[in-house]
Amino acid sequence: MHKTNPTKPPGFLYGTAWKEEDTKDLTLLALQTGFRGMDTANQRKHYFEAAVGEGIVEFLKETETSREDLFLQTKFTYQAGQDHRLPYNPNADYSTQVKESFASSLEHLQTDYIDSYVLHGPRLRQGLDDADIEVWAAMETFQEQGSTKVLGVSNVNAEQLSSLFQKAEVKPAFVQNRCYAHMGWDKEVRIFCQKNHIVYQGFSLLTANRQILAHPAVEAIATREQKTSAQIIFAFALHVGMLPLTGTSSQKHMQEDLAATASDLSTDDVNLIENLAL
Ligand SMILES: NC(=O)c1ccc[n+]([C@@H]2O[C@H](COP(=O)([O-])OP(=O)(O)OC[C@H]3O[C@@H](n4cnc5c(N)ncnc54)[C@H](OP(=O)(O)O)[C@@H]3O)[C@@H](O)[C@H]2O)c1
Image (cartoon, rainbow, N blue to C red):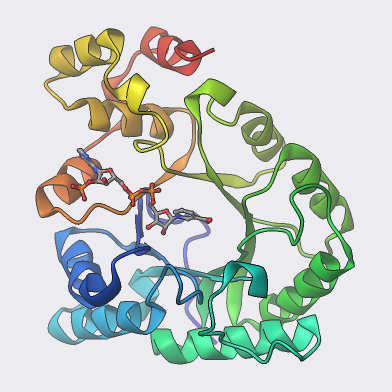
């Protein structure tokens, strides 16, 4: 049996998308800088999962850190989200595709378990279909066997999340969504998560909200706290209970991101930022 991970993941996740040949070095650098949570996907089009595994193995070799100290998250991606480099036979049924993708992720990451296994997104933009139910049922077997600790879902709207929550035997422990300030920072989904003990992971917090980063009110808070506007956005995310992701390639930004703390903000600051784009 594996040592039980804390159910609470690290406070920040390092995202490994779009790093290509730098993936191994940036994964290693992120771990050396202090990140303990890694987000990837078995989707070669956007991620190089095997290189993430190489960076992790190198880090474990060169430090006292053990696998159990890390939080590894990866995803199953439907064929529509992939290029020709598929981690499964596309002619197989969905549950076989998920099993093949999962086995390949374990190989890539050179581990015998995943901390959080995520459905990269429902098959269709609206609603859930039979494919999603079949995929989720296959994912549930990994959790039941102990080869993933928890399950998660990404790119969902509130209706899809609620429907999955009702139908699933094993409920999602995480939601990972792009977080837009103009949608109240994904308020509807976040409220569902809060009510149902799901941890909300936010991505594109900086890139999807450039106007908020540059907003004078955010800049004023940053000046007051002697932080950058990016750190204030991450502090806001932490304050409202999100688990933020960053995919920075700069060590300085890695350090700054990890140094963002919820306590930098007052309740008034949080209310202001929450409503800035509404
Ligand atoms: N589930 C999904 O469908 C999905 C989709 C997209 C992303 N993701 C995950 O989320 C991760 C993060 O992606 P993301 O979309 O949030 O964007 P990102 O790729 O992390 O981009 C972050 C941007 O913000 C900048 N940045 C980071 N920290 C900064 C700081 N302290 N000060 C100034 N600039 C800073 C980075 O620039 P520098 O490099 O110069 O620092 C970069 O341009 C991905 O790697 C992936 O793991 C998941």
